[in-house]
Image (cartoon, rainbow, N blue to C red; front, top):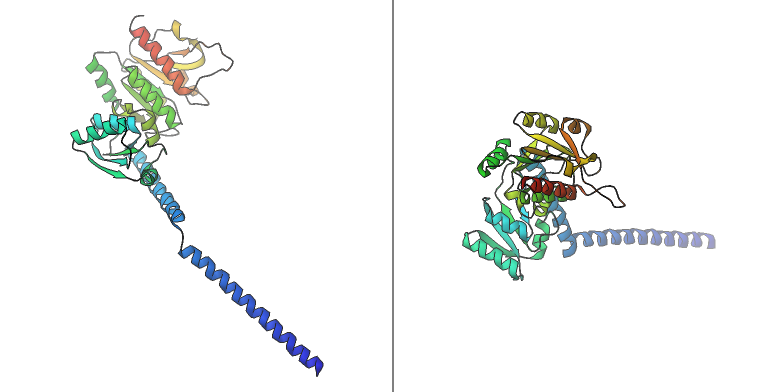
Length: 312
């Protein structure tokens, strides 16, 4: 009897323990479900942020494939130049609570041109931003296509100058691309040529790094840089390739119709493209490291071209 009672007690305890486990499992499930259903605002914003970023990346990829550049200008300089250029600005988004000098200038320009604008939260601008450095203002632009080669020659003709063109051989960093476009504009170059593949395109980062120069400087995208050089030679262009093993730039004739070739950040100008160039130029250096950043090298060489063209 005692044995039987003991057996019943053990069975009762076991059933209770099993029931307890089932209840605790159910409780854990309900708690997890509750946490998911009641996701706090921070998590919700994170999901929205990722979704917005994914949509923006898809838009940019589609734009690149179709030959169109980014629809947004970010940062104060880029937005001001976009407004003042011939580009159509559809709307300007300005961060709430900012009223300093440059923002006031943007507002004045926007109102003068009857451009739609709205004040939005910083969080909203962060979600819209591709670069992460919008400086409190983003402009939505009408889509625009890359320029045609004839646009470069037309610009040179209008200025009554020999064509001066930058040819970028697989520049991958959009910051470098934007900085070189800015240098091209300031040094009087008539256009920039970039490859369609394995290179940075006109993303929001590149536009911002150009400080708005992209809105004034024709940028042409081509399938094959080497073939393009051959075609431009037929139009009277001579080509100088930047390379550490070239002749010092001061000893090279950089006057006349010129294409200045700048190579990839890590590998420099590719062998085939280098062989197509008429001469190779280098920047005299005497420091402890052996190379300059691609955009810096482009700037140094560009203003040597300016110096020689001015006859100094």
